[in-house]
Amino acid sequence: MAHFSVATLLDQAGPVIGPRITDLVPELIDFRRRVHQHPELSFQEHQTTDRIVERLTAEGLSPQRFEGTGCYVDIGQGSHSVALRADIDALPILEQTGLSFASERPGMMHACGHDIHQTVMLGVAIALHRLHEEHPLPRKVRVIFQPAEEQLPGGAVQVIAAGGLQGIPRAFALHCEPKVDVGKIGTRIGAITSASDTIKVHLTGHGGHTSRPHLTEDLIYAMSQIAINVPAVLSRRMDIRSGVLVAWGQIEAGVAPNAIPSEGFMAGTMRCLDAEAWYRAGEILDEVIEQVAAPYGVDVHVEHIRGVPPVVNTEHETTILENAARQELGEDAVVLVEQSMGGEDFAWMLQEVPGTMIRLGTRTPGGPTYDLHQGDYDPDERAIGYGVQVMATAALRSIRWDMAKLSAEQFRSVSNYS
Image (cartoon, rainbow, N blue to C red; front, side, top):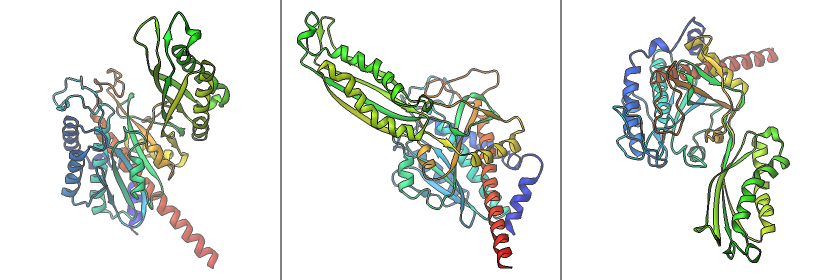
């Protein structure tokens, strides 16, 4: 009958988790600041993992390490109901916040909010464990602390290969959103992030003098045509509604204004909001680059690095998160967010199971709007407590859904037998 205590808890008016974590939030903020001071890059998160494991163990939990870095912990009993994922790696960015707890490692910073993510999920694990000791949870919640989200194709691939999602029916995640006020979450059904690939193009020719381009391969001109025409051709070969976008971020060639170079390099990204279109565009892209360059006689080598598919939020799982946010933070706590053309490796997990990623508001109302991956990113730390409330309550709602479904199936079974 344990599941009735979960249902009764969720049916009460007002927040369920908020009142239970009042004393925990200051500790979590201190934890986040220590993480922020000691950032670690992808697949180097050894101290970060140790810190998480030590705190979970001190709480009486039994975290399990992944090979290398990262870990996970299960709370509850029985089969699993949901996995909650947090990424833990930092970025190679010089911090410019001036905070008293700024990064002590030059050129490294938690500039994408992963320090917030892991702290929120640590709080969720602690809160659910304490609740489980009061009212045994009839289903397990797995909290995953995943390495290397910032290194394509992402640490999620290794987590999946290690069995991190085995037996898991759904997965939830959150990501800091500096455009949404603290105390609110942003959601969206369908694609919320983009697929993201890296394109590297190496070109070679004989080189020559700019007064005689007809006697050689005009490598610079060929590069300009690739830069302009490849995105244009893709826009005609692909359904425009799929959101395929090719943009170049690096073009290098030449050392003198009157010399046609013999080699050049250009690199960029291809992004797409539709998973099927992403696969098709990837097949077309290399062919289009070679066709555009062909009239100019240059040799072209395309290095197409597959990144991540789009994060596609399912309706049912998004509804669970939205209802959790409204219960904990109020009826106006949920806002619709725009699609992001950024990539996110949680997408690999949603290729395996249904789920959703929400945006956790980190902007101080009336304060500046920061951008992610920038050295001045300074999220409002109140987001930590709000994130714990929403994600822990969402886990409980997932459990209640599973138990209600089980009860309905048992009722049908008995009715059919009768």
